Length: 134
Image (tube, rainbow, N blue to C red):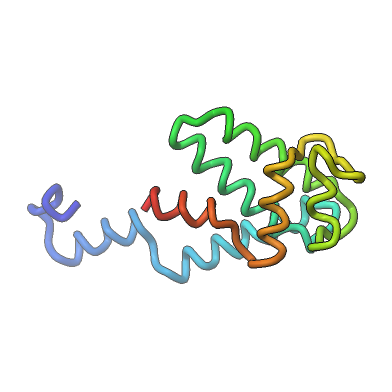
């Protein structure tokens, strides 16, 4: 970016960099707005973090051109949005294929990832995909 703008002054280059990448505060503000939007779109706001994680997984898989996995996580995120009760360690796995509280759109592997999220606050596969994308 700097090389592409070498004819510009230092202050002009700084403006280009800020325009491209923004400030940390801007990113935090955008993340907070995104989280608020997700919270307002889910039946139970306590499941918003889980929806956000599945949406991000979906986006990362689509960027890799893995449309099957991307579509599966999109489907799961949409299913989670409609769940009116809080997803907890006690009920997460039962929402998958073999569970007694089966929810359409959530398979066994998605249910395992939901359990992992409620236990740890993140999903290993999500962290792996974030690292690969960086």
